[in-house]
Structures are given as C-alpha cells and as structure tokens.
Image (tube, rainbow, N blue to C red; front, side, top):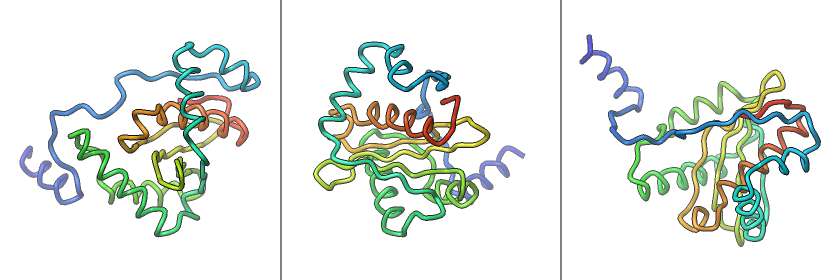
Length: 169
C-alpha cells in the first residue's frame, strides 16, 4: 500500500523530501481594527522590514485567479522554480498550484511584487467567508534580501481587510 501511495503521489507531481518548506510558525491576525492599529501591534522588526520592502517595491499587482493571464502564471511559475532551486527545497508542483488557481478561481488572488519592472515576489492569497489565508509565497534572491516577503504579507493583510476579511492567517 505504501509503494502504491508513493506511486500515485509521484504521478500527480509530488515527491519525497526531507526539507521543511512550510512556515514553522503561523499567526492569526485580527483585522477588525483599522489597519494602522493592526500594524501597530506587529513586532517592530516586522514593521521595519515592511517599510524597507516598500522602498524597493515599485508596484503590487493583485489578479483574481480566474483573470490571471498565461504570461502572469508563467512568470510566477518561473519565479517559483528559481526560488525552489535556490533554496534547495521541494515546494508544491506547478501543476498543483495551477489546480489551486482553477479550484479557487473566484476566491483566490495572485499577488505579484515588482522591483524596477522585474517580478521579485509572488504570493497566493485565498479569501473565503471573511477569512484570508496567505497560502503560498516565493521570491527572488533580491526579494528575500530586501524583505519583500514581509512587505507582501503586510500588503496582503491590508488588501484582504479591504476585501472584507476579518481574519488573516
């Protein structure tokens, strides 16, 4: 049975890895207060790194999954593949991420962060029943060195709050 399961996973783009790629910590953020107050309750390092990222990021692009173009998807997958290779980790397969985009077509967003018109970070955010979930993220080496993942997370909280979310995970 174990070998059969491994074979089925492999056929669907999954592989065996001993590397931990998911967050070791998570936080449930209450978004009911105005965002400046939510931000004020964050650790100083998070606020500082968010400000550093904002100085680097030229623009954020939010695209609902059902409106993501093939080019945007390809750019995100290229960034994802480079991120996984640089970090030497096994992340979700592009096929799996594409399936998530399909299944959450009207309740998921692809967030892209650009630095000088270069994609430096990408994130998938799912919003359902007033709960937003930071589902997946990847970034370039430059993005990581300039705290873009933190900037994207803070931006995602604020955007999710505008979309009606009360909770951010």
